[in-house]
Image (cartoon, rainbow, N blue to C red; front, side, top):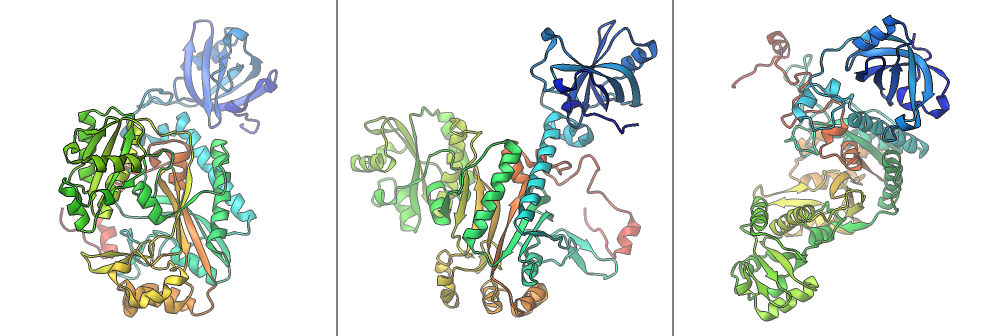
Length: 590
């Protein structure tokens, strides 16, 4: 019945005069008395077909009964529209189909959401009726472009000697920085599988097994608090390579991203991507994932304010902190907006947001009465002020200052429309600290993960490691950032079992604990492990940015809400008492 089917959105002037058979959903139906105009939609787009008074009564009656979202098949002939009826806003607007036969394949209730809506539809309604939401043009376009990105990745990596190899979904629980989703084992009572946060250990095992280039487009799972760019299950383009250094891995990833961007947006991005050290990124932008599409760079003013009359500045410096600022030139910022910026600063740990307005000659407002002439002169030089400007300061520990000004620069840029939304700024951030030291927990944590290799020149420092050296020992790690969002992270891995054991000890992982959690990797490293490294790219985040969506839920077919729920299927849900008993589980509490 459908063997000769044509697709609505693929019909062009080249098809004029041809007989076609179409099938899809009715998008609109306008009965003008003697003639009925209908729009038919399928996965490729829409086309108008016409039912005129010359057709048999039963065909016209069927057409009149076919309401919005009915599934129909149509047979007819393609013709060119009259010049006055051409719709240049539609890809198929120059042609229409003169219907000869119509069959209703499936009727529809009145849809609870308007599939053809131009107005905003509430997200809860969209997720509850996702089967209708996915018929909408913007969602259809997003999922088709997602498919293209995945195909490009597969084709590119396969043509560059990568092997696509699947790794287990059911595995043991290992620390990856977030909570695991656990799956109870029915056969092995009291024991649990964990859904993978990444295929990290298995892809390293594949390198040791001799598959020197691996990739996988893989689902990963993290039981963490959700936000617009996070989901409990997410998709990674995961890779690992043997006999490859950092530069080689970066080159392959840049070419892959070039191809993905071109397939999804039609744009061509410049290569090589710029690189910046972690320390420079934090110093200039307050974050390890900076948005470089605009300026508003952070300036260190610590050397100006050692003897400042504004007590918060010298107090912060005496405590080992810093005084830094951001200048906004040519601005007229209201008190209400400044108050909003101050509240934002408090959310990032700052006690407040000292500021001044430079009128072109002297400071005024805010803490201006504490700013001396020489201090203002130095500020003018440091910020390169050429006219009236606002300067916002943060004075606290380095981490609080960076977090405060990093968030503030993004907020100001959005408020002042400084961001070119059509621009794509890729950036490699490199040379991360290998460790972070928690004074509260009195222990070291891996900045990335425990299998990241330190740079060669820092290995000798590991045996005399002290908390104050945590930021000095540098990892062979790298993140790829796009428009201020980390879209991937990777590193060169440890391939020496003795070095891996030393790292475990520094992280407070005892030999017994390491044996329980990582015995198969530790054993494998003893049998000839090649130098290797890898990276994982977040497919959902990449598509969210390329398609200029506000949430990754708009590039995923069936996403979860901020509470981790699927409003369409009702997951998660209670299970029968028999199922719990079979697994030896019992639900307690509220």
